[in-house]
Figure 1 (tube, rainbow, N blue to C red):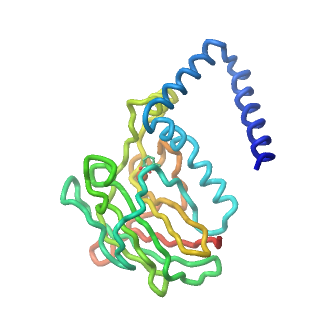
Figure 2 (figure 1 turned 90 degrees about the vertical axis):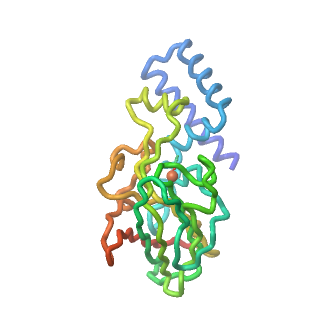
Figure 3 (figure 1 turned 120 degrees about the horizontal axis):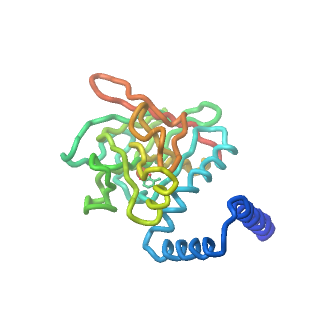
Length: 250
Ligand code: MBD
Ligand code: FE
């Protein structure tokens, strides 16, 4: 670990020095950068937000490069551990508010050999129809817009909920201003988060995005992976997202 830290930190400093030389960074600009980082760290959640926005996806790419199962994606800041347990099939509690569009999310979880996996704990969480998260924003109780499923004996799960909408990360702080200065906006496309866990398997964190929707091509977190952009299909008059998983062994 100490060897690793030595190698990585030397590389990191060299990479920053290269950018400084390339763009002829002055001492005044360096002082400005220090002040900017200090201000960011002193503002609650801002440094976390900035690091997640720019670098969390890279850790998912590192995981995906090593794994052979389904694509992992960023976790974001709004996972909560104690979502309601609803078994292999059920409903996420939602509020009758905003554009309340019912959807179904269903799928099957298999291992690398193609064998269905029962007993996988699958957390599903997403925004309200107003683009906020329960237990975090606006006093929406945390048992809404979240659930913990358990796959059945054939690895299946199915959940009814409402369609999430695009999410704007706070754009009035240093992260939002930085994005703006880079010519980018502060929006994420509508997405659903998943966390799949079972002893013997790697913990798998991912998201799905919806085909053709706003910001899919310009996510502020640059986290959209083709494999995770999924079309709605109609089944028995319901709008359905089919998200299957292939999980790597631990
Ligand atoms: C989110 O909902 C999210 O998923 C990420 C990655 C960052 C901020 C808010
Ligand atoms: Fe999110």
